[in-house]
Length: 570
Image (cartoon, rainbow, N blue to C red; front, side, top):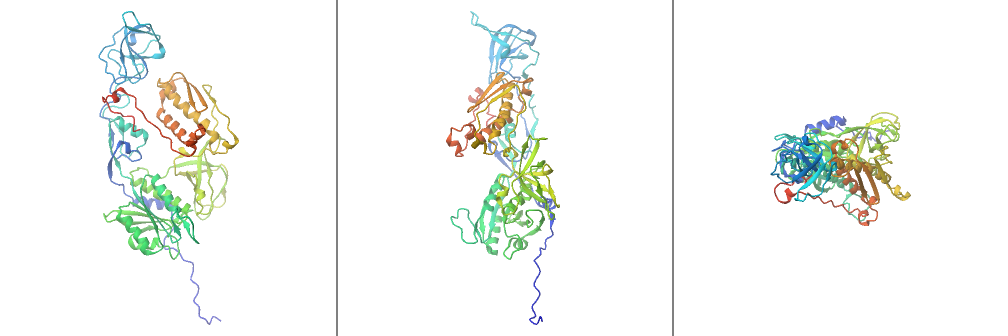
């Protein structure tokens, strides 16, 4: 027995890399990540960058006492009565007269308050009088005014020399507007990371391949990672596919290094197979910092550094070949690195607490990052609710469709019940989240909405039945802001297709028009995203064509070249 002298079968292969928690992996990545140098960009191109230096105001804003309302500049001590109109003070004017007791001047919103006037009476509190025989204009002031009423003093918005933005701030739309207001037409920002992306595998073919042969698949990972890197602010270089040979993989490494890439993303080739070449080749050419992470999905995640010809380190992320694993690892480790490089002070993904919409099973071996859609729910206690987009195998990319968050499920036996509170890492803009249920507006006697009937076929489209309520809330906020600034009358009718929204101006002038920019931005976003629902008679919109938005600045000052246009770029 046993005379054949056969050697015992070898045991299962084991990795030489210790399995580390994801928190430790992220710490290691960020410890190897440098902030990139700065560059100067035009104001119109600054959005999405991190500001490198503080921005200061060269002069106060407004630089002159400005009217908040359309109306009449008056001497407050005069009180109600009939007065001669001695001049006009419109935007861009420079009044060369003085408002004396017994006289007033017509003034528009934003116009300079003439010398001598110390208050503004809104036009709704006046009555026009017939012109006198001598040609003089007159007006009846119906209410008295207090000194300073409806006047923005010099520098009430921004003081001369004030820092309107600090170094390290993210430049969004409002920040572009602030930079424009202080004349910052060239902006120093932290450069964006250059990200090279490659796939590896003999079985991988380009997406445009018409017919697949036996054992072949189209390369979804590379297209997905290119899109994800761009969405997170990266300047992306597509390196294509490397065959499962050392020469092919090394050639891609060299191409990335020669191009000056700050980050290289590889997909596949990091597991335990005999053709998983990424880890061994990284060990030969650089330093592997970790090769296994305690997480589901994404256990084979590998992180290494290779030295570029200029002496800087290129960060290399060996992402698993399974698509969901690859994408989850990208968000958990690559995004923080990209943000640190781009100058973010706090580069980690943002966490929120959510309630589960359905039970979820936990894994006793590893903590899981479960794909989910997070959105607001008015049901029950209200708050953010997480809807699973599907678990299953890490190759099942459908489970990541529409996901805007990763649920942090603990390593444990059993299941989490419906309504359980867990933390969620946000991986995309929650403002673009799908709407799962009808949002019921609170009772508001000042607002009436007329809605067209929703057919059963329309109601099956995700979010359709919530559009009216969401539009109502957004447009009411916008209308309130416009009412508060005096741009609209007390009762406003807003028409969108066959929808009519009537809005009554509330007390306190809707907090003086706060959130006007946000409301307009939200309204435009709603139109762009829901256009084909609001205007079903326009078939070209249903094809997915983009909505073109024109921006016009109306100003005598700008039109005549007497002053800069500081509103357009925002």
